[in-house]
Image (cartoon, rainbow, N blue to C red; front, side):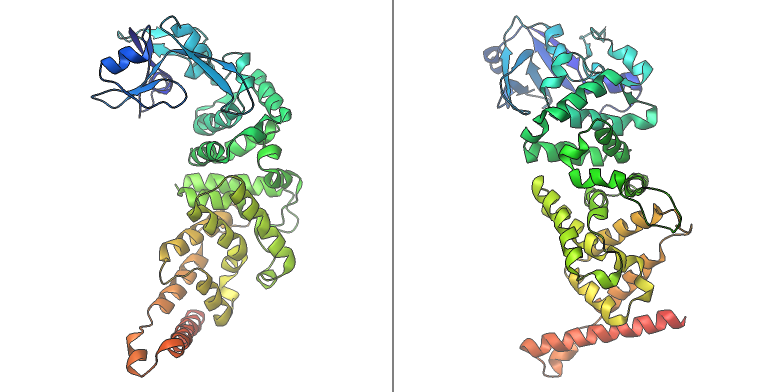
Length: 407
């Protein structure tokens, strides 16, 4: 039995980055021997084991052969005679196909260290084109390392385009796609993730609604020649710069698909059809509920936020009601964050912040400050109590607006 440190731990050490988790590959052993040594099996498709003391993952060296469509369409072969080189050969990128032995000696059969120096994301072998998930993975690594100067090698981009055109991306499960997408959005440059997918033709397969933005004019400012996609990429950069959580980043990715032209259009049929695009993408990838809900609400009410100071007290109150600000105040805060990211990405953004957020936050606090107990003491109950509470909250928002505009 020989044990080697592999993959990301080796790559990040050579890059001088923190190593957050370590994976190991075991050569010359079997599942029976691993279990006899106390390792706990966890792999469903191929033998992966947890170390009895550290809990780190140890995988038996393996080869794989394409047997069907999609990420899961492979037959894996493990045996004591599978070599380290054969195991590394099945990996996606050369920078992920390096290993270290017990003495810290680097094993680099495919030029990973050289590609690290050249800042290249390059595939290990032509077998790369057998796994459609690797399109998403490469785009994610590009988003992670873009600020270090990394780019996708031309020959790798060609294989990614080949995969995009093959229809194989459609065979990916929603759950596996979402795992890669969500991780990519949390990288330092989520805008690069979108751009790389566009450049290789995968965006039109995975997100045709977003792909169309690359030809759609952006109407931030009159006379400004740009596309909606360029604005979206700036929004994603703002999300990363302000360390926004995943629900905000997902929401910002989908914002252009459903935002109304003006607050007055919010109930129009065309806007409802636009919001259906957000709903369709949410459904396509079985997105977690918190991300789904925030994306839909922001798509509907983004324009209201930007125009907050000009809204009537009644309209402002009705917007607040949609967010259930009394029981879920944190969701309203995430909405304000998404709106601010969109505003900061606009070419006419005025340095100094997003005052609409504080204005809306103050209106919400005014509505929340109304107490129900005095109404009960005045004899209200049931439906009448609910209506009286609503009127009191509306009046509190009206007073807040009057004061804010008079100051």
